[in-house]
Image 1 (cartoon, rainbow, N blue to C red):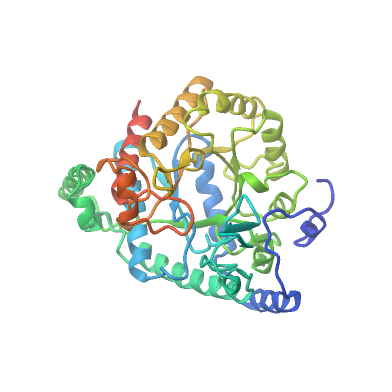
Image 2 (cartoon, one colour):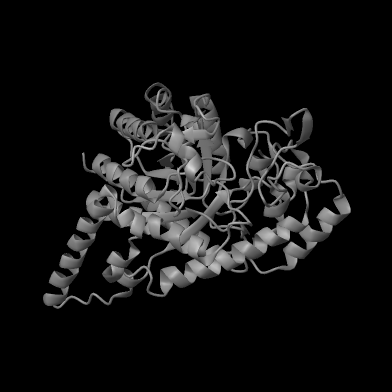
Length: 446
C-alpha cells in the first residue's frame, strides 16, 4: 500500500462483487453525470462524525448504527423514512437514559442500495439469470429484462438518497427529535406491546426530569434537547458509484466520498490487495470494516494499519459479525491483538449476519434470542480483554414486519409469511428493536 493514492488507483486492483454492466458507454455517461451533481454530504459533517466516533473509541460514548438491510425504490416514502428514524431515536433514548452514555446515531440509510451476493447467478426451474444485487443495479423480479444491470438506476439511487437526506435533516433539526416530545415517537404497534410500555415508562421519566430542570430554572429549550446529530452510512460496494461522488475538500485538500458520512467494507470485500480497501484507504471519511469468524489477528492488524495508519481515534470501526455460537472463541484474540498494538478503533457488534438461517417455511430468517446471545457474547469478550464494547450494528425497519423469529411476540415459523417484506435480509421490527435496545442498555450498566 505504499503507492500514492488517487481516486482511480483502485482500478488496478481486483474488484469483487461488481455487476457485469452490458453497455460501458451508457455506464460512463451516467457516472459522468453523477460526477457533476452536488455532493450528498459534506466533508465537515464527515469530520464531525469522526470526532464523535473518537469519543466512542475512548469509551466515552456508544455507537448505534441501524437501518434497512437494503433500501428499495418500490417502498420509498416519507412515512417509511420517518418510521425508521423513530425507531432509531427510540433505541437511542433507551440506550442514553438507561445506559448513561451519549449515543452516536448512524443510519443505514440514504445510500444502502447495493448488496453482495454469494453467487453471480440464480437458477429457478432450470432458468439461470444474474443475481439481484440491489435496486441500484437491477430488479428483484425473476425475469431476463429485470435482472440486466441498468446504469440509469445509479441516478435514481442518487436522487432517492438526496430526498431521504433532505427529510432526515428536516426531522432531526426541525423539532421532531425534541426530547420534550419523546412521547410522540411511539407508534401504535409499539405502544401496545410490552416493549412499548417499558418505553412509555422511560418517556415518563424523561418528562419528569425535564419538568424538574425547568422548575430549577434550567433552560429546557436548549437546542441540544431539540435537535439530534444523525449521520448516514452504507456499504461502499459499488465502486464506480462511490468514485463518481468523491470530491476534494476545498478547505483541507483531502478527498471525501460524499455519498455518505461513513462507509464500510463488507466481509466479502475486505481483501487487503483488493479494490475496496485500496479505494477507501484514501478517503477521509470515517470507515467501517466487517470482521467475520475466519478473520485472524494478523489480518485485522493489517486492516488497521492500512485504513488508519495515523491511528486517528474514530477513523476506523471494526464491526464483528461472528455468530452467537462462535463469538466467545473468535473475538477475544482479535480484541487482544488490536489492544496490544494500541490501535484506537471502535468495536461494534453486528449480531445479524452471523445468525441467519432458512426457516421451516423456506424463508431466510434470524432468531431474536440468537441476536441477543451474540450481543451478550460481544460484551463478555470485551470484559475479558479489558476493551470497550463500543456499539451495535443492526438491520431493522419501522414497519411491523414478521421477518425475525422470537421477541416479545414470540414469532414462530408460521408467522413469517404474514408480513415478510424484505428484498434481501430479514430485519428486526419496531418491537424487537426497542427490546434489543433495553437489553443492550442492561449490558452497558453491568
